[in-house]
Amino acid sequence: METIGPRIVFRRKLLGLKGKELAERVGCHPPDISDWEKSKNIPSVESLIKLARALETTETWLVSGENPETSAKDRGNPELRQMPVDNSGGGRDNSSMTQWEHEMIQDKNQIIALQKEKIRGLEERLAKLEGEKGRKTSKKPTG
Image (cartoon, rainbow, N blue to C red; front, side):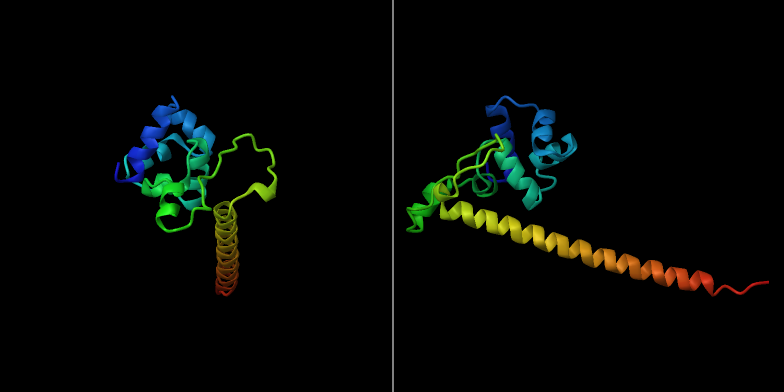
């Protein structure tokens, strides 16, 4: 399992899920799951996070095949452990979160902020283009 696709298939089958069921858990379309499993596309970071939760594993394992706990020990960081999966949506005591979990949340928040910034930029460009279009159409000669 050298790519993310076979690992998605492996976890989905291990959990007894159909592609459609996994898509519902992730909040995407079934063809997205199929494309990811066939390695035609890779999930966005946001989808990867949801996919890991739905497959009851970690983003690290999906992307690299490595167990975060094992790879952390290899790097001399025994504090890092595999992130527990909580699909209930209920809150957890923040004091029990590991450094790795904090970093994942920070990364997610940074990605969301960047996406919002991109959206604002696109909205500004669209408004500018619409303004230019309005000026061009109002300059048409009459007659």
